[in-house]
Image (cartoon, rainbow, N blue to C red; front, side, top):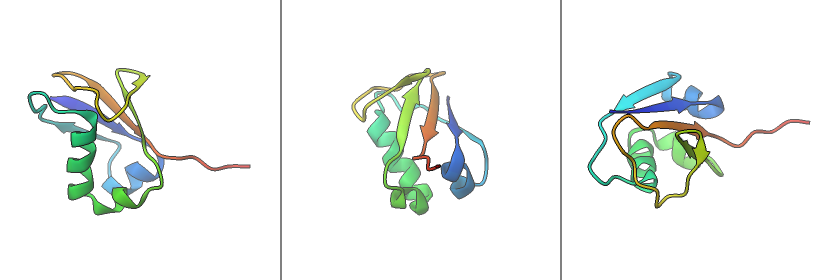
Length: 79
């Protein structure tokens, strides 16, 4: 399993602060995002969505492994 922590608007879209998902063998960050956007189409409307894997920002090509901790970090605004 991989744990996905959700922050800000991503948490509001999904309706909970975390998800536990099965880790597909060789699944990448990009594939995980595609799966989540299929399940939660509103995630696809976000201008950007940063992903951290085990506390480090990760690109779409990064492979995921069992027990990885993923964070979805939407854009923040403020003033």
